[in-house]
Length: 95
Picture 1 (cartoon, rainbow, N blue to C red):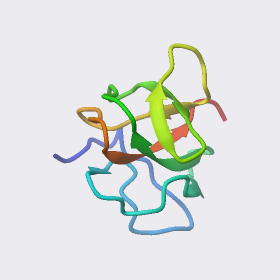
Picture 2: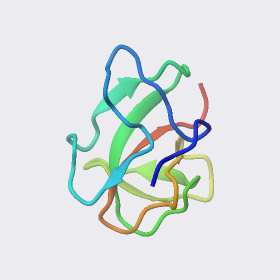
Picture 3: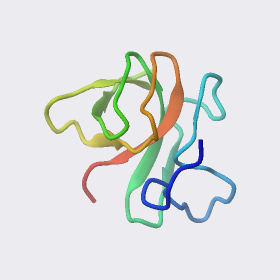
Picture 4: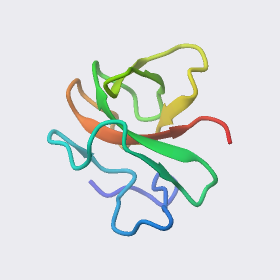
């Protein structure tokens, strides 16, 4: 499923990373951190539960992502959300 421009983050200086992609197998090590040209940090996580496409999440020490009703500092932008065990990029909620 292709993401719309509103859900895809472009990243500099790295090329070739689809920030809106999700996968059942890791493309990067969990907790990999990159800077996006939207001024935010992005971190690679593994969902520990089903997560909505724009969920606010907390990230554990091993890169696990779980739902957070507060402001844990990270949010998803993944079309269709994630199922437990899927990998994806999340971004800092605030700059």
